[in-house]
Length: 328
Image (cartoon, rainbow, N blue to C red):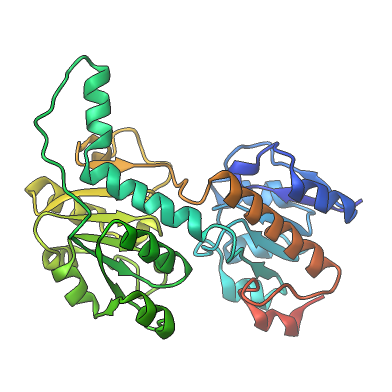
């Protein structure tokens, strides 16, 4: 019986609807011996002989793909695929899929949770109270009446906008291909990045990690941000120059940051961002509420079943449609 390897950490040794779906389709579901596949060699060793994987954030480089000739499907349990060499996968006949409908609302909720945690010093106050200090001197930053700038108005960005408006915030957005009907109905003002940074009390990132968005937030763009503003990132760590962010936080130019992603994951214990009271960091978990985990895993499993049965997955799921020319 053919096998499917599940490498995404959140599903490790966790059966559920996705497990049943794969089993009914005739596949044995396996998990790698290592909890995290951090290196190329880890991936090559774990995936040898498997035709499909429900993938986490491990690397799928050209070297990895060349060493796995039997691999046919990389089904990302999420929407990011910056760790996959898409051109190599296409050339080698490996289909890459994502789960576009599975997690966008969960990520939107988490982005706002980080914003509230930073703006209202939730973590610091909770730690102080547990430590026996009853402090009521902090003046918090309200969301009502403030301006939220959303960089990237796709599914997640639109979900953030809807929720932010309920807090009474003005919403700006920077988006190359906006949903004009949504923008009009929600009264969102479309601006360029410089205008967004200059006007926003809060900036939240919701664009894919690409060559043009790598280090999008750097010394120059941070300098354009409104003094005393807050930066939120639930997209990819590489979109921020962390040294520049540290300087902006230490100087007081930024009031704080809420980060679900970092350049290096997991970070070393002495990572300087973890030492700042005005920074809240979560371990890349924005997409992992119970409903999103269920929806993403089912979508990833369906993509595998469909592809290995000779059916193309739904629109929006297949990242590299050019693979059809090389598909077996």
